[in-house]
Length: 271
Image 1 (cartoon, one colour):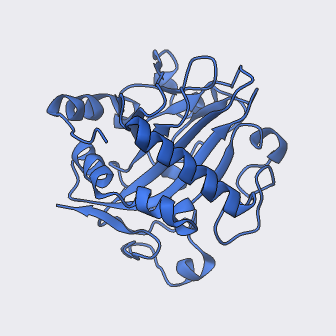
Image 2 (cartoon, helix red, strand yellow):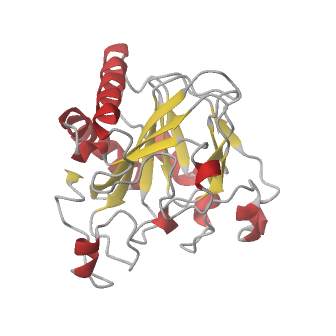
């Protein structure tokens, strides 16, 4: 694993809100990640969440048009909670340290992992932000996005709007069918030049949860598979949104309470 972060990469991430790390995984590690993800997906039998019966392509209460959004990507969350191999991968302290260095935080907790699989001819992923969906407000929350297949201009690679993380807020524009809907909230970025994140399989990117990003449609007959994990800086507090939390967890929380339940959000790195 290429887990050594340079000052140049930290500066680039802080400036642009994202950074690409080529050849993050060795060929053997890539094979292991692919096998673990495939095993975890098979065990889930199509269930998007560990503790819910919502299946891929069904209405999850978040998106109104399940048919359209079901064809954006197959999305399964918190595979680490239902598969031991995925737990070992997601709990890797080296990745937590990378996230801490890039975000300049002292501690990193897992918010949730998710696999994002664009099937052949899948719909595009509209411009959006991540953090406004989550149960905490922190300007340094971030995600890793690991390419399990080559991510190309043709099959649905990510795009970022550099520097957008410095001016966006925790207001949630949502994700719509229209690629440009986010600019109703952030018109200052409508003329910005987006940057494609073309990556070979085994490479990865990190991006700030307030950086505007999206993805092409898959214009090929092949799959574009990715494994991602969202990270919460240690010390973050509950903002009142449920997101991935269970009804039982929400019932025990009030706004301002620390989100430090290691069963749900394990601390994978601390300085």
